[in-house]
Amino acid sequence: MPAFVDTNVAVYALGRDSDKKARAKQVLDAAPIASSQVINEAISVLTGKQRFAREEAYEVADALMKLVAVAPVTANTVRDAMTLGLRYGLNHWDALIVAAALSTDCDTLYSEDMQDGQVFEGRLTVKNPFIG
Image (cartoon, rainbow, N blue to C red; front, top):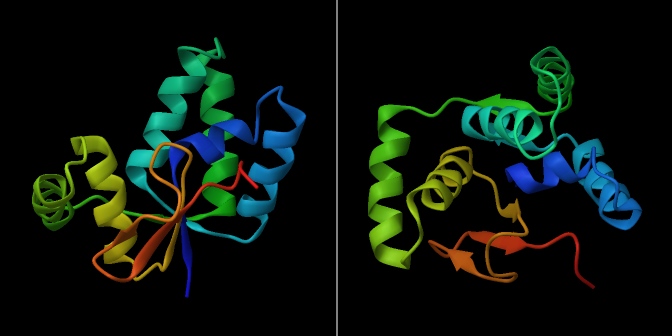
């Protein structure tokens, strides 16, 4: 089954922390799925905290989209996220990531932002690639 990647993994692939960078690249090399939200959040982080020029951030986002399958965020994804957010106590943006991962039939969600080992809907397990 495919894996889904959260924004932090994509951003760490470009970072200065060599351990996190190496682990993030391993995850991306396996051609995971990311939602359009992940791509847009990566652009936001790159142009904000990372201080990339917009053109550079767009080039990085384009390269990222060549490494991952990009899943759209649809009205159904948003509705599912609202349900998941209430059920699991997630903030909306994390719930949207989980909803997109579930909608693409992923069994693994690589993320640093959610609890490692947490299982959603009995079929999606969060794995933090930066621990262990």
